[in-house]
Image (cartoon, rainbow over all chains, first blue to last red):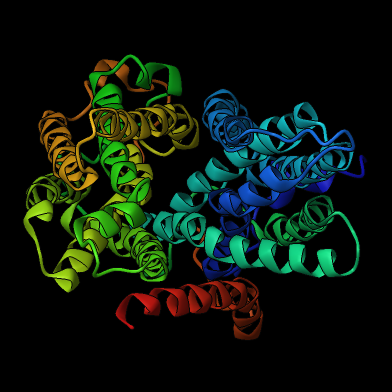
Length: 454
Length: 41
């Protein structure tokens, strides 16, 4: 028996009596760790200030590629390895994720010690990026199987962790760098080395805790709804068949547009507030605004995904797009600071909610058998939005700077474009219909409809 | 045969598992909330 046989799917089947409430902490351990990637910006200034022995330093663009590469590899690896995850099981996938994420930090630490940017790209960007992608999708289908009565709540809990990971990662990174600087070590390399070990250990908690439910398991006292929404299938669709359906590409567009609009505001939150409320908001207060948006982003993931269990996934996205389009349009004309901050918070909560609700939407439409793999493929929409959103914002800001016009005039245009994108998203979501039966897996028996309240 | 959950996972183990993830989360949320408070000062 191999030393790693405990990672096999068969060895991770829960014994009767195993509480399903032990599974969300396992998923959270993974997502809280990999959510650190959104705190990478705390390393930007130290990396820019870090000089090699010959006095050379890295440019802002070169340092920026580390984060971009990690996010790009996240999307690519989720798309590629999602299918493998379905056969290997969540424990093995989470172990590989923990190993890659931890190892990525350690390789990056070696790169920092050597002052070698390619080694940092390889470590944090490529190896760590694979850990991000696998970690992001690995607990999703397991949570849905444990919580057939509340798939939105369960996946919302896990994906909320990804939003919260930056809140832990940022102070952890700053404290470690400060400690090692005072003790005479190279602060970036030493902090990364420690973080590799800490995050690996934390993620291993999730690896050991995760269990898959036995076949035919269902929550005690729960009976599948006799009649449910037409958008909730009782059949399953494979990942390859799913990609041939219009529903997959409509949801791809739904996610991409929701994320693009959210990134548009997140990307430039602090300068936007300072430009729109010139003289009223200090740099410190603008930093507080960014912190507040992080809380809304995290909370929205749990609240909206949980709400979707009651009002349905399509209706939840209808709210995101209809309300979002109106609020984005009105935002530039709000001259009361507290109202502006509140509306921006609601908008960001819907950005986070979009991430957290999509796995349950996929499960509704395509069944649970390949939901992690389908989710993995859909995350390419995130990678695309991660490029398109900042591109739109920066192109408009650059144009205003180049033509000497005040930036305060650029933000209304940006927000109105985001509003228009959400209108397109509304139409895409409106067009989502049940998947045609020719895409269903024929040889499997129908699975019970598993949501209530739709 | 359908297997249903019985209460054999101890409430203590469930509470401990949640504490492992909630303690660092609470630390991060607290620090972020403190930072967010600057907006209203």
